[in-house]
Image (cartoon, rainbow, N blue to C red):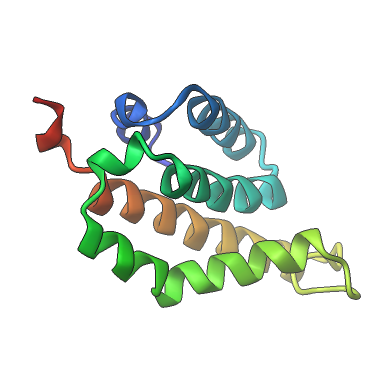
Length: 127
């Protein structure tokens, strides 16, 4: 599950919009709102990537690597499957197995967000 203390370390890098999204993300995790957590994890990353001020704290080579990463592609695909209904998808069958699948997907989405935060927001640029 999410390391709230570690994510809060990155508040400095985030604009007010992303800070609120991060708080919502933490609440969604605490309240087992799994689909919301998946959606917000990518929304936070997209917000960081699109904010010109935040980009001052992001290493360009690492950003390019992230944007082309398998994990980010998976997260975007999973989020889109949740948002754009084209029929039932795994994690939404209201069964025990389905709950395990979406919880597993939330864990993966959380790792993607944590890895992005740890690897792409350079604390050394705070000075």
